[in-house]
Amino acid sequence: MKILIIKFRNIGDVLLSTPLIENLFKNYNNCKIDLAINKECESMVSFNPFINNIYSYNRSFIKGKSLYSKLKYEFNYFKELNKNKYDLILNLTEGDRGGLTTLFLSGKVKMGYESRKGILKYIKNFDAYASDFLKIHTIDKDLQFIGLLKKDIKNKNVSLYWTKNDEEIVANILKSNNINKFVQIHPVSRWMFKCWENDRMAKIIDYLQMKKDIKVIITASPEKKERDRVDEILNLCDSKPLNLTAKLTLKQLAYLSSRADLFFGIDSAPMHMAAAVNTPIFALMGGSESIHWGPWSNEQLINNYTTNDGIQNMGKNTIISNYDHEIFYENKIKKCKGMVKIEVNEVLKVINEKI
Image (cartoon, rainbow, N blue to C red; front, top):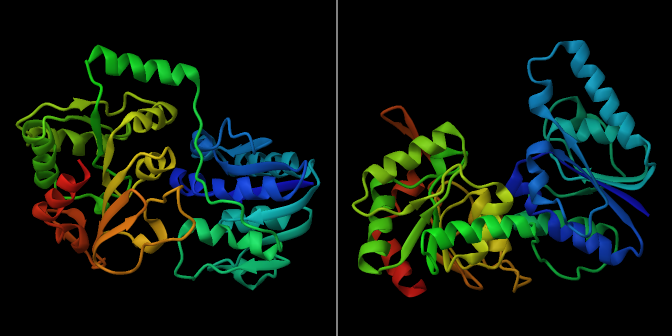
């Protein structure tokens, strides 16, 4: 059986689709599962033993190209996918890109989410639909397709893989800095309104290093806005954590997380990555819904996160959530009231329980 999964989303979204991939593989003997994803998400699924082929859509390649070049790229992309003559196509993308891809591909059975807007909303593109509006975790949302296929859910493990070389690079960094036990702090997200206040994050870093005598390693992507935000936080610190911003690939970041004693940060793809490698998580969630995006525990099958404010736990993962999602601007900086309402003392209390 040949299966295509379409998920043109961000890296965290693609990572959280791995339980669906594994369940499909274990329910269909000798099946071959291909993925159609954005190129920047490849690291989330490469080396995954349940995946046959990855067809990457390179958005940056066609950016700024002529209309002819864009159409040619699209045509060749669809043509390459159509060669496989899929038995089952699952579209996990709610937007136009996934809907159009499914529309132009031939497949014996097509399933997906209803398009939210545009002309695709009025085209019956699928043989069966999963719900896009349930108050459930993103993992459970995608696993609806296992139920639609009348198959059993074997597990809900989020999986992530790297190479021996990735391990050696990270191990050498830790050895050269004489670090064994450490807390990983990832204070940023591509969506900056999800971030906590800089001065509060600096206080937690100093508390861990100066009061708890635990080394802190800071991680962030090479994106300028993330690098700038980390610099602002570190300028407010009295201690000197190891700053690995922009120095690791996503694979190396995943392995680093697997070596950490605790991940502390906000809702971000690296938070989900750290949870996937079974590192205890402590995350602040004031700009996103914990019931959908809370850090998943591979040890459990049931989502414990709710729409309540306060401390919530799932396995060894802990969050502080605040559901005031009102957006406001302060000195031209986009913020979320829920994140601002989370106080340092609340965080320190949980830190002391986790460490």
